[in-house]
Amino acid sequence: MTAAALSTLSSCVLRAEEKNEQSRWISVSGTGSVSVKSDTATINLAVVSYNRSVIEASRLNAEAVTKVRVALIDAGFSSDSITTSDYRIWQDVSSRGGVQYRGDYRVSNSLHIVTQDIEKVGNAIDVAVKAGANEFSSIQFSATKIEDALREARTLAIKNAAEAANLMAKTAGAELGRIMNIQESSAPVRGSYESAKFMATNDFATPINAGNSEVSVTVHCNYELK
Picture 1: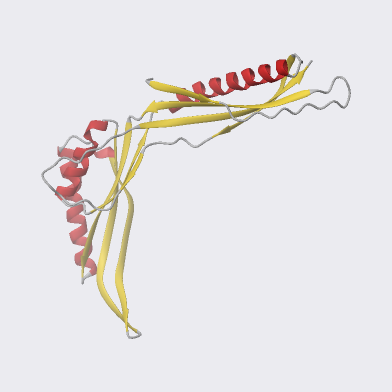
Picture 2: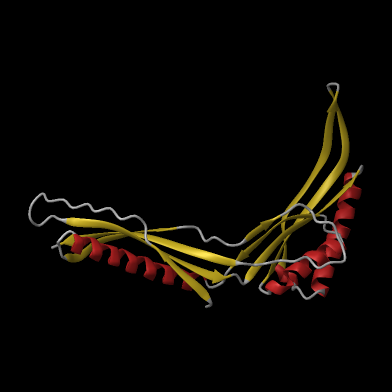
């Protein structure tokens, strides 16, 4: 796993209580963050068709979506990586002078395209748009080695908490004892995210930069003081 490991220490609060000689403790927090190179992309786009006839709108949409799927498969994307995420039919309605006017029927078929070849993301967008896709909502980048990064982040967080506890105990003239409890709070994995409206076709390749996904874990630990 190619990862840039970052570790941060949250503010630590000394909570020493002395109900009797044997009930002193210290509470600390530690945070570990690991940055992992994104290796998976999910592209979200759609084909929207419209016509006065709902049947014709549906037919046009089915034809256009088929062209998009075939073009993507011909470009090297597997059929299993191209899935439907949403399908909707509605009729445009406008109002003028208190009177409602019904317009065209619209049919929208949204597709998820998943690839682990980041270099092909821009090409997937270009191919889909040229084949008939006319709405582009987002690209979500993620990493497949998140579990490894999570374990590394936990290790960093525990080490940071232990270092903080030792420092505070020594500064207070005490000796660190056994750990009494540990609580973990994990931040959601932050992956690279790009969003845009439909981009017009042109003769240039769409540039895409995947970036990294970041995993962050914070632990809250109570240590006994001797």
